[in-house]
Image 1 (tube, each protein chain N blue to C red):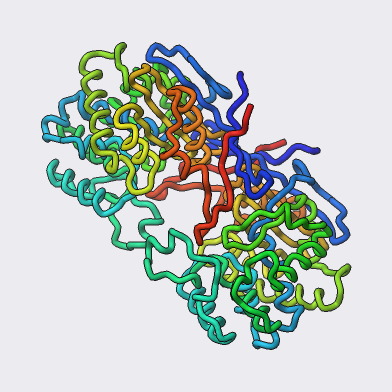
Image 2 (cartoon, helix red, strand yellow):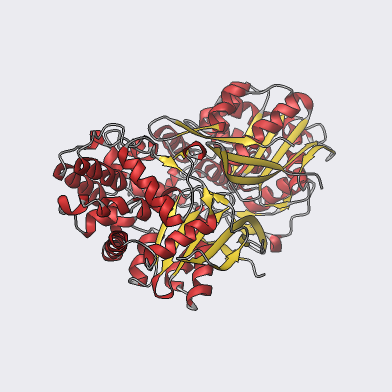
Length: 320
Length: 320
């Protein structure tokens, strides 16, 4: 095992907090080309693998059957802010498939309910992914109720897509439950990087999956705001990179990124679950892999200001 | 150095994230009676030392001059939620000293502005502390403008109180800037525990400081909601413990706690800055020190449910 990245929070002349971060770069065949920390670290990928969980939506023909475009496909891969535009788009999509927000089984975050006691599950950051699950259920002609459960046909398809793209046997007995209610399968960090590489350069994948990945990736690039929202790294990086990099964040400090032209995938996990640390680590790894520093995207995340705009701290990868 | 506490996030049958947490228990003379991790860890105490930063408010006679009661003294020690009751109390206090929210130099959190673009600095979690600073400035008859700056008479008093109670030389050149704009001095973790012990059992302190600490502690116990707010650990623990434990949290995973009847102070720092990990660690340390497990306060913080109320994860101190 190589040394992990150490992301340090500097306040004045001293380090205030430290984050251990694992990162793996791999190709579609599973070859690890760069690594910091433990490539085998068992990692719950959380929402970072939403683009992979959305593959069945396109592969099954459900997306075409309901005439979904880039906005819906981007939302299917999204952890969005629940801004009015996100909610309206999900509600319109649900109407198209004959469903409502009541059919979503993801609930809604307490933070949204605090602001708006009438907030529906369409505001949940995962509502696009769940609208995608409902669309698949409709297309398959199966009961939509219980679509988040491990035994439901939709989740079986999702698990198969994850197992095949990560090249990992996913044992239901090892799974946990994600924030939105679906199963979450822990897997080695390198397996997430391998699947990420495939998503951008799916040379090893079956033709229907190649097509699905290309359409989902193109949707994320075309509609980055629908992947996350105002002020979010995924949106900012997708917009700035214009297809050179794909990125999707997950809870507890997970990042999945793709550099299609190099055929490489990146998976990052902050040992302590810190999202800011995982973002700064991603900037470091991308600079190493791409050879360019996307400062316009990452500098604002490294520089911390307080409530009156004074620069008070910096989040930096420690030199090794 | 002894082993630090390891706080683990379990999701299903596997650990998802891990947090290293340092904890020190000390008495007012600076004797360390228990320790996990590095007692010398240089720690930015952040808001955990607000009760110490409030000492000059009482010691100078400013609190009496403006007839402050338990609500104001609790607010002076608070990191509050900015709920309507907090804001109204701070606004009324500012009126009493001939100031307004415009005199507060702490700014207001972006999260509050997102919900209410008209939110004033009275909604800032630190507004009670800052109202206290303004009260001291008024009482001293000095300019209120710039009261957050290191050279201002109010900050000189605050720094002296911190240096004396922590028994630490605080070099302004080593200080950083806190989220609310005032200086924050890094200090060994044991020094924070020592000052915490003094706050509850100030046998070594000068008489005016003893009186100030007793009044501030009594105010925190009498008005716990004004110390933090709905759903917050400080409020819940202060209310449940009814004077047996005092507690104040700080940003980046700092906790200060006092067990007055034992003459002991506790200081906790999560290496990675995680507040949830620091809270669970505090529950563990308090159980060791007090010999009783305050399960009604800490169980809800150890048990994590998702947006539909399903129990999905647990935050636990790993057995050693």
